[in-house]
Picture 1 (cartoon, rainbow, N blue to C red):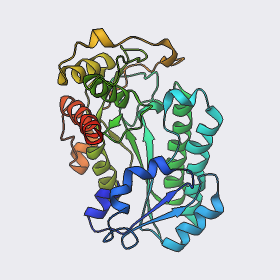
Picture 2 (picture 1 turned 180 degrees about the vertical axis):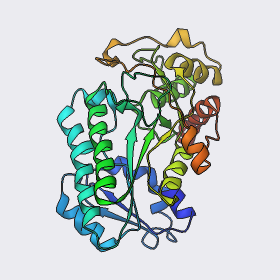
Picture 3 (picture 1 turned 90 degrees about the horizontal axis):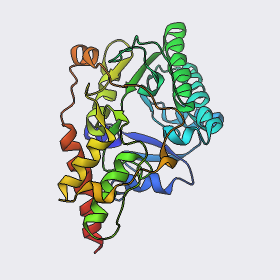
Length: 312
């Protein structure tokens, strides 16, 4: 998101925790650029639980656009830490909406909702009008935050958009997410650094898109003349097994020899067929995904191989 905004000429202010060194490593290339860091990109220490500090940062910066993407976003982990997940995804959104409401200069607010709000969906594919039936603490928290955003838009006239995004992946995905685990394992096994991959339910199906495409959708929502909610998705379902097959095929390895199911990674409840209908954002904002599923897998595996090769 920061890269896209900088490319468009924005000055970007981001909020980081003092302990978030791993996450900041993903923008190291921007921080090392003397033409950008400290001139057009600024980082502020803050925390989602600290409304006073968040309020001071927003008051000092006076942003025209606010992209709320922060929080614990691992669905499986939300079963282990449900309280902090709901605090970060739910209550933090309320704090930021209150801060936005208090600003003298109106700002445009993007809230990162999630396909997980639909959970055990009552219809396939899902649209913004599909009933919310979350199947995880994360999904419940996001459903709460999504409804709050709508309430603040309708009650206070705030320019608030919910981006109901389906899974969006890139080589920068966290190592505890299944797509990154698969890409990393395929590359490491191909380079004789590992011998096996232990995923959870191989038959789980997801609507996977490229993060690069999806941040463009976020930006487009805040450029429109009226605020609204949009589903951002590819409209295609792929099981985890297909991601594994494609990743291992790229490095000419028989996946069956190296992949073993680990029930420890199975979720207590698995969402139904979560696949989105992005017709509205295609028609209204002219957005569409540019890369294919196979291109996404290739991009992630090749990035892992390049990282390994650069170290050896």
